[in-house]
Length: 116
Length: 114
Image 1 (cartoon, chains in turn green, brown):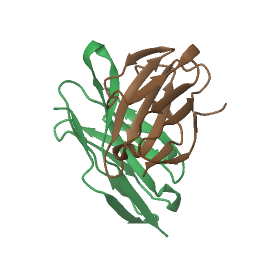
Image 2 (tube, rainbow over the protein chains, first blue to last red):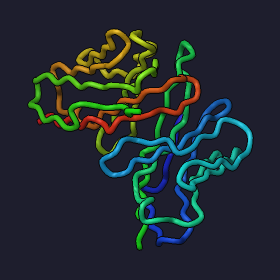
Image 3 (spheres, rainbow over the protein chains, first blue to last red):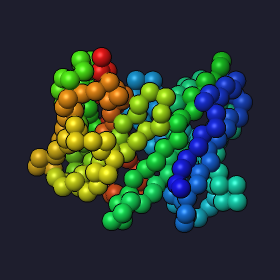
Image 4 (spheres, each protein chain N blue to C red):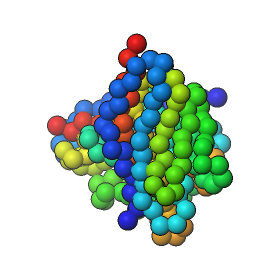
């Protein structure tokens, strides 16, 4: 079965410290993985994606994610957190329906709180 | 460039009533998606339009939901009659390329069914 898991409902980190938001996945075949962020009262915004190539993917706002095939993980990271990074983060996996249609399946989301 | 806009931002209706949600995608984006997030659960795919055609509607929960995209521009999602379990946030997203997976989302329409 294809699925995405975000094991932490909430992550708290002090400003200036590194942050990690965890994501694991299950898929048959090669995974196409994404991170989206939702700031308060805003829509979801694309952060980064892994399709193929380097396991370390760089994205917007200084975020990066590390793809690990053996651990089936795609953790989101940032070396130094900002208070403005406080938001809801979603990991997503692109899967294929019948008829070769594509859709995203999502984790439950992780609320990141960066404390000043 | 204007982003994806959704209307209304919040709707409160009684069970059995009808609600219509509207989405205006980014101009030139042929692909339009509807997703829904019910409180405490994951975001779920509802359907995908390519221009005015329904490419994939496998996620539509039942026949109380009707989505249209006349003329391939804006889309509407009608729920009739609404049930309590329909409460949630309905997200619309658009993209130029349906293969890359990078979607541009609206702010969502929060639906509360009492």
